[in-house]
Length: 117
Image (cartoon, rainbow, N blue to C red; front, side):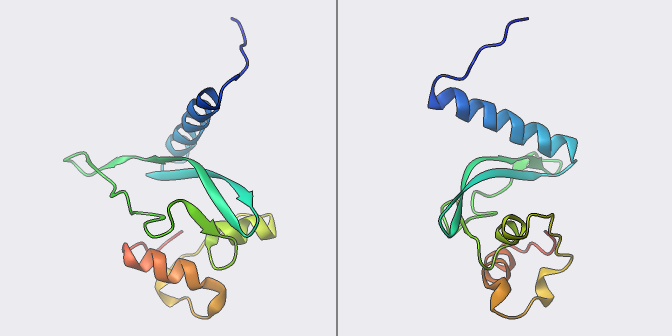
């Protein structure tokens, strides 16, 4: 077995997609993403969305990041809070969140009907 290094941006992108896809499957979830912090946002650099339902219908492209183009704010998002606090953050019911601290997650995720993150 040989080990080769990633020498192009495309190589890195393919590797990150494989990591995100494998992580989603290991965690038995239908969505996963990886991002890099850039100032006050997280730029999503790889994402995985599994087919759903018996028809194999894919998750809609706006399932997450519909209005943000893959840029999550650190303030007001679950992913941002996890980065800022350095821990896993779980929100059981998004519909009961109040206040400015959850403004992004409340508005964006209710739009697509997601309740848990």
